[in-house]
Image (tube, helix red, strand yellow):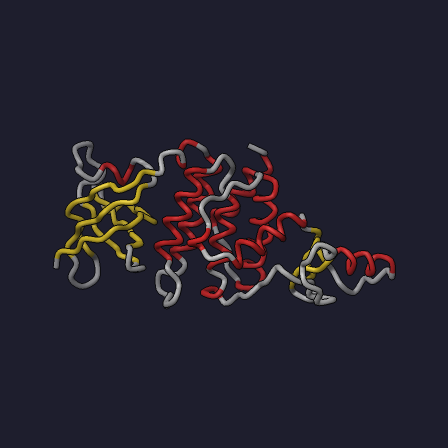
Length: 260
């Protein structure tokens, strides 16, 4: 049966000398594997698949299992992503996260809309794109078995109002804690609870990303420093609490150390 669906390419793998097998996330939140014959040839009609991030209409034959791409029509190009290595690594990270859900039930979450918004935000951004990667990790917590909140102290339970500055992550309470609780532990020389300092602005930003519906966000353009702090916290939560280690994270950490 001939299918015609909008989608974004998530993965491309060589198959033989000239062909590729691709995985596309389509507008109906399906992960569709397709054979693309002759993609590695210079005369291929599908060379757009090698020219960066795009949203496109995929026309393909689908029966059981692997589909076969027949034609592709570009709808939107995200042309700046591959021009900046940090943007590119953030986009690759998001693709890797999405692919972890390929065989999971994703009812109730519009993965395709989230992916489209993410690519638009990174493309428009002047920064490293890690704020967008953090947005994706926030929105997908439920599907990975997580439910972290960033609006209250998990030790004294005060809400994040102006007089309560959330400034650390506690490994004892498994959540963010406020500046007053950190100070109290330091003054009492309490060694029983380990914690890591987090930029309060990063925690506040994560709370906003966690709670504001995706359709109410028009852009993301946080500073690189805040974006990195947000990402490192979210990546740690996924690693330590959900057991997910993402290969792209290592590359992102190397970029951060090089301060590109």
